Amino acid sequence: MTTPARPQVARRAPRWVWIVMVVSLAINLLVLGGALGAAWHFRYIRALGNGAAPHHFGAFVATLPRAKRQQIDAILSAQRVELQPLRQAVRQARREVGNAFAAEPFDKERFRTLNLAYIEARRRVLEARAKAYPDIISILDASERKAFLRWRHWRRSWRHRWRRHGSGEQPPGNRP
Image (cartoon, rainbow, N blue to C red; front, side, top):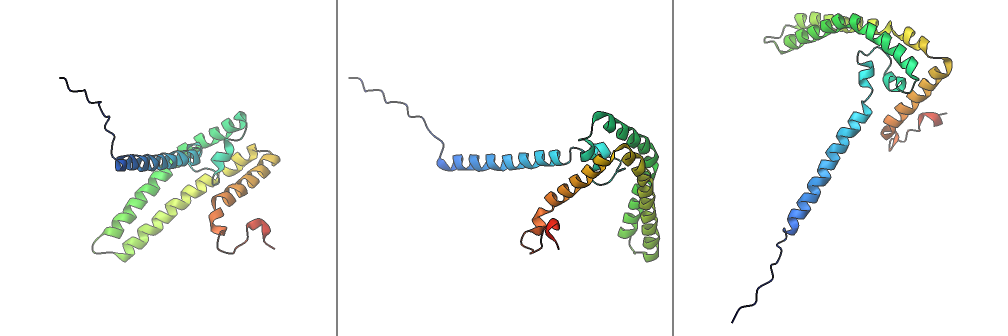
């Protein structure tokens, strides 16, 4: 007599393995979503990498017609050459302040002097950046300048909306 062949039973993974896989997938999707969200949020940072225009102006510039974007880009590219040595001076001053901060024994006067030099170097960069503002803004017509103000207000209110919740504070548009 022959023995009947036993059917092959497919072995399944334990339930906990599936749970771990689903949780792992969820975490991976959260990390990926965070990375993509950051990339989306900061996508225009390189447009104004030298910081020559008001905060978040680069994202607004991306909404302008191509000709105006190119004009603004030309101004920023020209200014980048001027800012490079000033930024190097800021980096060097920052390093020196850090070294003085960590030095043992701590020399209060040396730290104060280097810190003031660092602040002065940063001020020179800000002044050089501010020289380009009138040139950049003169490219925009009145309706675009007003649109920028509305856009900036919308961005600010959207970005800081969490601060209004639970504090009892009214949104800026509803204040008396």
